[in-house]
Length: 166
Image (cartoon, rainbow, N blue to C red; front, side, top):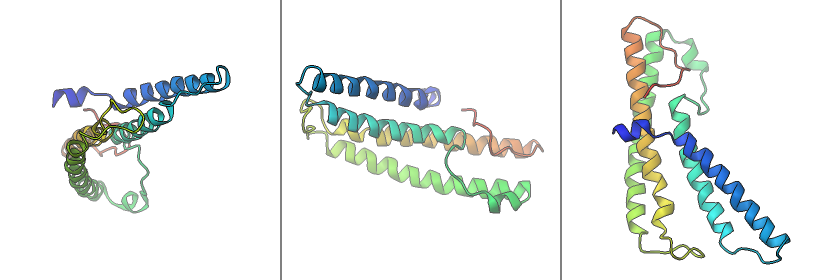
């Protein structure tokens, strides 16, 4: 659990973006300079992008960076807003928990199938990002709920726009 709290998925997503830039540069160079394109780059880029999106989505949970419609919640008093956020986060945690379970099943199911071009890499590597990102999302959601509850109990108005301290 401590490892999940320290895991910085935003940094990993940024490193994946840098890696994608390097792989794209290698593809362009091999294709147009050496006239011999690399076969593996398209597949590698596709799955690096999948990992980057899932980990970036998980990073957005830390600071409530996902799109939200706040017209209704802004009209509520602080206690009502707290209960709305706790209810929403509870439903979200249930959904992410289900996604974790299904992602773990898919990861195990596709362990023996190789990727098309990178045939030494099992498909489970692609699916592994689902349980990893869902686990970090769950940790971030629970930490956010705990912080919101503690802020409310301390008679301070919870700041629902602040980054959650995990």
